[in-house]
Length: 318
Image (tube, rainbow, N blue to C red; front, side, top):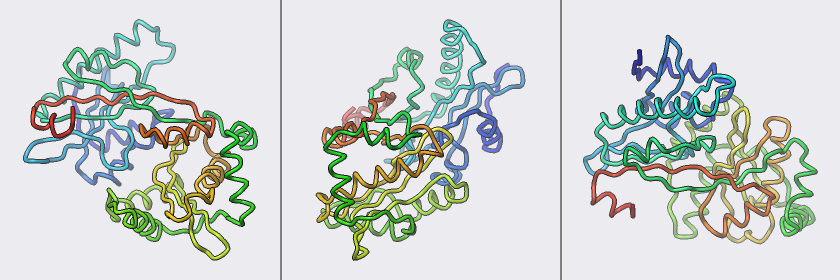
C-alpha cells in the first residue's frame, strides 16, 4: 500500500534517521528558508518510509511554481536505498518511486516546475518519460580535506601564490564578523557595482540563526591591519560536506588574494569536521576556472524542469 503524507513532522523524523541527509533537504533548513510554505511527499511500503520529495510552491503571475527556495542548492528527491540492493532492483525501485512522486506533483497543477537534484541522483529517465526536461550543471568539490597541507600542495600555483601574497601583506582571518554586518557588507559591495542583493536580510538571518543553533555554519572574513574587510563568506555544512554558500569581495581589494586565502582558511577550519568541500557550483566561465584551480573535481548534477506555459517558457528562456 502506498500512502501520501505532507506531514512536516513525519518528514523531519525521516530526516533524523537517515545515515546521511544533505543540509538543504533537512526539515529544519526548510523551516528556515520557507517557513510553512514547504511540503514533503513521502513514499511508504510496509510501514516504512523509503523516499521523500520535499518542495515549495509559490505563486507568481497568478500561477503556481514549484522551484528551489532561495539559497537552497538542491531540492526534491531523496531515496533510502535498501542495503546491498542489486543494480536492476535499484533501477526498478527508482522508477516506481519517481513515477509515484511525478503523479503527485502533477496533481499540484503547477504551471512551472524546476529543481536542482543532489549529485548522487543519476537516473532521471522516469522524468524524461513524463515529458520533463533536463540540463546538466556542475559543482566543484575538493573530495578530501582531512589533510589540509596536502590540499594546499595540490592547489594550482596561481592559487598558492595568491594565498602567500595575502599572508605576506598581513591579511588575517577573522571568525567574529556577525551575521547582520556580513549581510550589510555583501549588500553594500553589490550596490557599489550597480547590483542588488538577491535575498533579504530576514532570510539570511533566519538561515544563520538556525544553522548556528546546530553548529553547522560559520562566517569567515579576511581583513587587513586596519580592520578593513577584503572578503568574507558564509559556509554551511552537513555530516559530509561544507558548502561555500555566499561570498562577497570588497571591489577595490579584488587583487589582494583575500578570496583565495578565505577558501584556504575554510578548508583548514572544516578539515576535522567534514570530508568534502563543495564550492556550490557555477556555470560562469571565470568562476569555474577559479574553483577548478583549487584542485576541485567537476561534479555534475541535474536541473530538471517542466513548463506548461509557453509564455513562462519564453520569459525563462526554456
